[in-house]
Image (cartoon, rainbow, N blue to C red):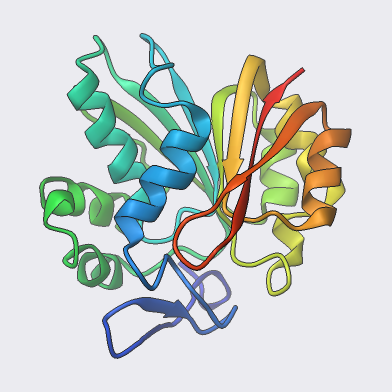
Length: 224
């Protein structure tokens, strides 16, 4: 991995990791796992929509906490076969930093090593009985248009639109819509007007919902 592809992790006193590049925490200062479940699982009506072959795609892999929350929910739902999960990440976190971040969540312990394995060699998919994970490294503005997949649910989890606008642009949101299966959905922690309008233009019926913790609002939507 080249230097240009990495991002140094800083740590707050409470142990929350912060991206030095984007000056933004990787997850909620209150409870990252609870935030993930509220925003990305409930926001996409999961696990109720889970079915064999279900495919989640994500912008912004971060610590892998969203992946682990989805994997836990999939196992608890008892769906046959593996969950498919594809994540687009420009600056993968060093695996040792991901392990340090995930150590804050006892429920994540069973899958933390798998996450570190994926980050250590992103070019190699991680295939397990319950999940197939593909981490696509690079600028999503280039890698997503080249992707030949379609997602049933999107986790839009880039850093704040104010600090990471490249991951929220109208052209990229159009690609999200183009790579969403019929009846597919998205969820994101942000309710920024520009992002919501871009998702509407991409074909989603966008709804503003109650956010988690200190965030008053978030956004969800279904492809119309």
